[in-house]
Length: 198
Image (cartoon, rainbow, N blue to C red; front, side, top):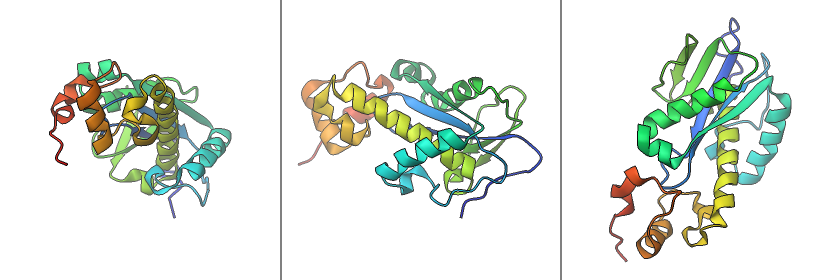
């Protein structure tokens, strides 16, 4: 059972990102402010939920949340600032869009770059512990999946509709055969050039 609140004292926003380990596509983050004491028995880490349930939960989260927002960093921006910073800055972009300003940020993971003067707590595997982080993980994952399905139509060889830009064997073979696209992260070149053993 996930915990509703880290503290009853502050307006909390849960933050998480999707796409950090990918070879292609943006990193997309979400920030979600849920009502105090919010409960939803289906809510969990997006990686532990099937696709159908994730999309069902997205609709529920968007309806129930006090505020939610999405932020992203493009492959070119990732190449410029590195993937770790891009993960932080995409969260910052999501937070910038919130009309209700949080007083405490709950960040999935063990590191974060300070956002203004807002307090934050880094929570390892937080998407499996706190409702607001789990909600952010659902939104980040589904919005990124939607984007990858869309650009798959432009470059179907890479099967982004299935692998979502992650370094699967099929994705690596397609890169060897067709090269990289404008959607690939060039700073991951060492991963793109890995030899494939059949």
